Image (cartoon, rainbow, N blue to C red; front, top):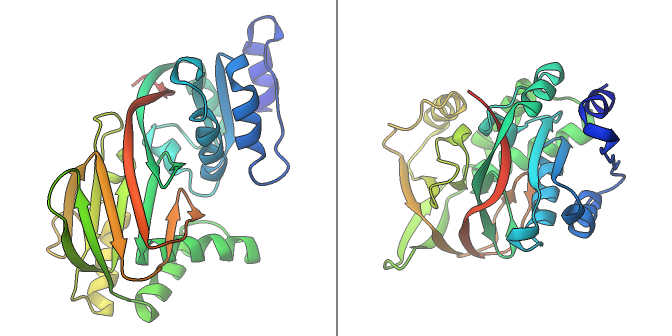
Length: 273
C-alpha cells in the first residue's frame, strides 16, 4: 500500500525498496548504500529508525541523505517527536509535504541514538515491555502500564552515580532512574545543541512512585520535587554497578557512559505545521 503510493509519487520510478530480514540489516544497508540516494525512508518502528540513523552517521556529513520516517511500530517515539501521524494514510501524505530540518544526534559510547537513553527504573520498564511484546504478541498502553507497575512495586532500586556535565565539577547522586533525551515528546528541543537530563531521587514509596509514573506518561511530571532537570552537550556517567540501561529500545551494557551531541548532524523530514 505505502510502497505503491510512493512509487506513484516518485519521479521516473526512482524509488528503491529494501526489505530487512534480521537485526542490523538496515544499519548495514544504509551504511553501504545511503550515499547513492537523496532520501532514506524508514518504514517501521523505533528500532528500525535507530539502525538507519547509525548507518547514516557512519557517513561523512556531506554525503548523508535526508531521513524520512513512516511509523508502524509499537512505540514510535521518534515519529511522535517529529509530529508524524501514526496513521499510514496520513503519514505518507505528510512525508511528501515535509521540510528537511537539521537535527542534533546524540552518541553514547560510540552508539548514535535519535530519541532516548535511560538507566534504572525507566530502562527496566522499557526492556520488560519489549520482552513481553515478543513473548505474548501483546501491544499497547495496557502492556506498558502492567510492566511499569510491576517494576514500581518490586524493583524500586536506588543506583549511585557520579555525573559530570560539560566541564563542570562532577557530583554524586542516588537515583531511581536517569534519562538523557533528544526529542519534543520528552520536552527537549531537537536542534539546540543540548541534551535534556532528567533523574528521579528518593524517597518514593509505591503509591507516590505510581502517581509520578502516571503523571510522566501524560507529561505532567515536571513540577514534582523528586525530579531534577539539567542540560548539557557532554555528559559522563559512572555508576557503581551495572544496571538496566537502554538506548532507543535496545539494551546497552556497562557502568561507564560518555554521551555527547553532534549538533544539527542529520537532516530529517518534518511535516509542515
